[in-house]
Image (cartoon, rainbow, N blue to C red; front, side):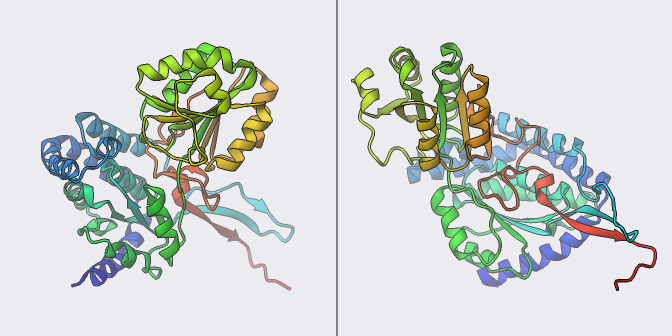
Length: 418
């Protein structure tokens, strides 16, 4: 079969498997997740072997350090994936849960039941852990999934696909419930995006270019997350020690991820005192700063920021810094350049914090905490599918409940409509 025929057959198989998975008991689904976790640990060395092949190709291809970081599977990665699966297994199964029943004047009892979405297509770059996280979440929420990872992770993803298939078969379930596209050819993406008869939702994870391509070409509804242009605003009442720790963590703890800070906003009344010490800490972490004119007056040795810096998602140890008049100016800057992803304020003023939370448009808004906490695991969802910056049907990290929808269930005793 050619690529288009292969993808179409995968989609057909996934649709059939989804009907089986949607009816599974929680015990059956948890059995699969536990088996996946056990197999990951048991077969770690073979996964490392395949991952090294991808890393060698990535270095030859000249991929950035941030991309190679995302691609690397380490012992910690294995432990995180296995732990995430066991955590998801321990979570309450949302499928079949009912909202509180409402009794209508005619006696009808109306409720809503959580049900799986059906078949989910995931298109992503690097990060082999997404293969496991996404499969685990989809299976626990009763969905089938088709996973199309980046060509740079082909060897790693095929090794993980074998583990997922083995775990499903060990529980007597169809391995077609979680399939990994077996080709590097980019035409497979177009073929998958055309399977509207069998696939119910597409979730792209990766750079802005990939996501815009998916949105433009998909015949299937898409959950979008174009980029993470995240800000930390240091208010005039901020505790400096706290602000320094938060800003450093938000930028430097792991710069190549979507919830890393890309622009630091500082209130003008504290900028002269706060920025020199903050700049020294950034320098120790090898963060390159780019500043507005008022920042340059305080830090004359850093390069000037250009208009291209404010909307930039660097995914690297680069940070734009801007001194703003007040919180209104900070929020205006966020409204213009933010990506509805993650925004944080450091302040000791309760009213300012409450206003920032209420008015800033982002999937996660933090007060006195790092932007790095916009993560499903950190927010109590377990392993996440990704972070949605669109508002239909989910906004923010997507855990189990966000991978379901609701149908109405109406119970009567003979009512007819007049």
